[in-house]
Length: 216
Image (cartoon, rainbow, N blue to C red; front, top):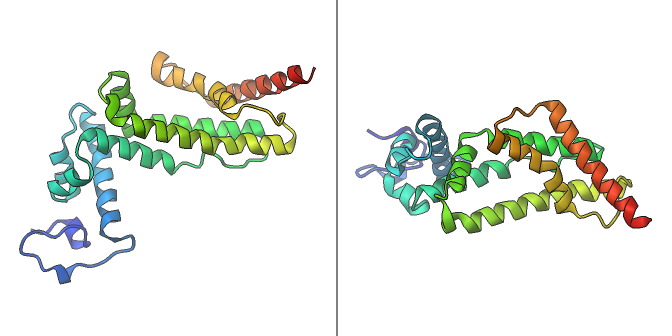
């Protein structure tokens, strides 16, 4: 029996006719990635990172296991790729017209991201030392890109005159983000909208104060 994915042109089992494939927008590779990522998220929700098995991901996605192993040799690769893919889709640098509001949007995205099964799986693996060096490059690339995108918030604030031109973008972003990660990952305390506003405003005020001190 041909899987639903196969019917959409993603995977063709033995005996199927290649010319019978139906091409969809994005092509075969895009459909495979989407199906496997959906299956991974579902299984992470059901069994967690420790219970995740690549052959079960393949079965859930309706693709051959060799297709999964060829692109993601280990579940570290699969979950890390899923995490990076989902976070890359977030608009963390949206322009709202003010520094504090821009920072709040960024913090809201962090909360939404950390609460996904993929993020929880990756973070649990990192904290438990499971990922080790295998995902180091991916993690470093992720954070470098996230801070690069977040820096647009600081650039706009400088242009608006809300921050001095020499403001350290990464330091300000870390100042705003740190309490969110502490609560979500370490203490388990809730993070409210009022908290996000406070964290954003406090980080902005510290950066502005540091700029005034330098001028003096």
